[in-house]
Every structure is written in structure tokens, then in C-alpha cells.
Amino acid sequence: MPGNRRLIMPMIALLTIVAAIWGTILFQHITPRLGLDLRGGSSVTFAPSNPNGAPVTKEQIDRTIDIIRNRVNSSGVAEAEVSSEGNNIVVAIPDVKDPDVVIQRVQTTAQLQMRPVLAQAAAGSATYKQAPFNTVDCSKPESYTAPDNPDKTVVLCTNISGKLQVDPSGTKLQLGKVALQGADVSSAQAQLATSGNNITTGQWVTNLNFSGAGQKKFATLTGNAACNTQGTPQTEIAIILDHVVINSPPVATDVQCHVGITQGGQITGQSESEAKFLAPLISSGALPLTLTQQDRNTVSATLGSDSLRAGLIAGAIGLAATFLYVMLYYRGLGLVIWLGLTIAALLNVGVVLLMGKYQGFTLTLAGIAGLIVAIGISADSYVVFFERLKDEVRDGKTLRTSVDRGWQRSFHTLVSANTVSFAAALILYLLAICPVRGFAFTLGLATLVDFFAVWMVGRPVVTLLTRTRLFQEGRFVGIRAAV
Image (tube, rainbow, N blue to C red):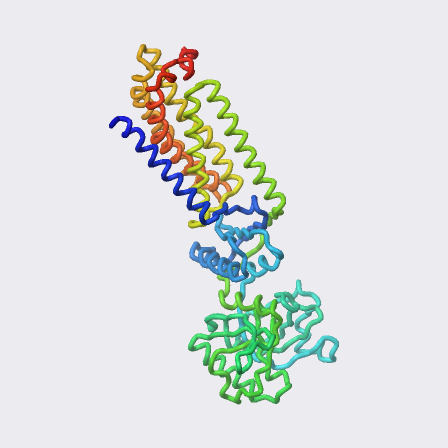
């Protein structure tokens, strides 16, 4: 009895772990966190570069990734992935209603400036094509060149509503030198405006918070604008993002001349989409690098569902074929392999689900392939053990006494084989790019689980079974037929 307890306790411990994992999954209704190739979405590869032509540094790439991740998250896009692959930056966006808007927000460098408006010329007016407004052509955005010197007056075009694109028929503005830049703004929030009694007015605004120095600059800028006659362009403050005028609101009538706005700031006259588009760009700050789109892959949700179904079917076929083969070859001992593979599968899938919930692990089609390959690795561990057991029987030992000796002889082989498999998966994970890393992770995970399951279940179950009269019959366990 004490010997049986020593064999039974590891199995009870392992089954308890399996029950705890799946109890957590069922209780919390945890579902797999699927990658883009299984649920649909867009993957965009950007090539970063320095505007001044200097080499791109790792610190700049890391900073760019952080800013992009903040922008995407602030857009309400759940479970987007931003990573580096070599010198490129890859942004993976799950299936959303309008991925083009998200991609535009990602790629925008968001160089914010505020300048005083000196004069303006509407399209079709007499001054529209006269100096100084004739220095730019808004109808040809591809030829539009942005100003480089913040200390000079410039002429810029206004944007298409809600977009960072020059409006071909928009108004031209002559602007003074830069009075405030993005670094002077600490945060920005889009929200509904409220009246004095905290009742929403239905109008959207972008509230700005400035640094200490930035607030002083903003007070000076708005105070100077307030000294001009109401209704003239000179009372307006141009807000420029990536060298396009996205808004030019006038200062409020209650702003005092030479005093200005001394607490925060607010951009009014916006639609909801405009406010929500502008605020995250201002708040996250300017990208340190220019991003050029190199490649874009789009996977529909239907195609992702088909891929997931195909992967699950492939796994089921592989598992069923393995079950059939081991039952025909090892007969009664094949039941042990069935039990071991079932427990390993429950552990592998359970750990993947929990890691998706608590660690953000994303299951891709490559990851499913790693789990399918692991079926063969798990079965192979039992094959090594059983073949060693056969060798002991061929040497004249009884089946019951051959189990311990067979396990001892196979143990070092199992350790070596699983160590090599795990090391290969680890190296592949460290050196490969995202899809292959998913394969390497699940393969390495399955290798560890396989060895753990064989150790905790394989040997104890075989030892207990071979003590029964039925399993003393060699033909029932597929050994005599193999001799």
C-alpha cells in the first residue's frame, strides 16, 4: 500500500492542477486571445527614418513604439500589437470598422505648433493668388512644402475637416512665428463642453493643459491676439499639426488684452470626430521618427475564422490518427498514451488560455501548428519508454519487473530529447519574428508539459496496470507480438 500511495500521489497532484486550471477557465469564461490571422485585421510595416538623415537608434525606435501604442489604445482599439522587426516597426490592428483612420493616426508625426494669424485669403478672393499667398498652391498638395524655420512668417493651407490633409479649395493663412510647440502641452482631452451649471451643451471641445513655461507662452499668445478688433483674422490662433492648419479659433471676447488665458486652454468649434482625432495626437506627443509605410496585409474576419477552423480540424485529425496507431501497436498500453496525451492537451490549451487572459499571449495559426507538432513529441516520449520496456522483456524479465528498469533506461533519453527540443524552441523564439515566435513558444511549452506529464502519469500508471492480471498478458499490451 505505501508503494501504491507513492505512485498515486503524483497523479492526484497532476489531475488537481488540471482541474484548477480548467475550473478557473470555466468560472471566468476565459476564451482564447486570437491573433490577426485567426480573427481578421490589418498588419502594417513601417520603415522609420530620421528627418535629418541621421542613423535611427534603438532608443528612438522604442520611444516611437511607446507613442504609437498610446495612440492606438487611445483610439479604443483593443489588443493591438506594436513591435519592432529588425529596423522596421510593425503595427497589428485587429478587425475594426475603419482601420485607415487608425493607420493614419499611427503614421502622423504630430509636430504641433501654434502661431498667430496675420492675414487670410479665401479661395476665389482677389488676394488668393497674390503675394504673399501665392507662395503655396493648396490645389496641389503633393507639391506643398512645409516651413522649416519657426522664426519666420509662413503661408499655410487649412485642412480637410477631420483629416490631416490639405484642403485643395481651403483658405490660406499668413502666420507669424511659432509661439508654442508640442513640448509645451502636457495633455489634451476631447470632451463635451458644459455650461456654468455643468449641463452639456452638445458641442465638442479639446481641453489643453500646459507646462509651466507653456502656460506663460499661451497667455502671451492669446493676450496679444485679444488686443485686435473682434472679427478680424488677427484675433485667431492657428493650431498646426504636421504643418497643416487644423484649426484657427479666435480668442474669446472675455479674454483681456496683454493678459490672455492664464489657466489651461480650450479648442472649440469642433465636431466629435475632429476632437477625438486631435486630442490623442497632441497628448501622445510628436514621433521622433518619420514612418514610411512599406507593406500592409489585411485578413478578413471570415478568412481568420476559416483558418482557425482548419487548424482545429488538423489538430483533431492528428490526435485521432495518433490514438489509432498507438492502440493498434501497443494495445492495452495504448490506453496509457491516450490518457497522457489527453492530460498534456488539457494542460497545453489551459496554459495558453490563461496566458492570453493574464499575460497577453496571442494565439496565432503558427501557435496552433506548434501545439499540433507537440502531439508527435508527446507520443514519442511514451514510445521511447515502451520500447525500453520491451527490451527488458526480451532479456527474460517479467513485464512487472521490467517497468522500473525500462523507465530508468529511457529516462536519460527522454531528458536529452526534450532538452534538445526545448533549446531549439527557445533559440527560435529569441531570434525569430512574430509568427515564428508563436510557433516556437507553443512548441517549447508543449515540450515542458510533455515531460512533466510523462513523469507524473506515464510511469505510475504503467506500474499500477502491470500489477493487474489482465496486463500480465503480453499480447494485451502488444509486447509478445513484437518479439
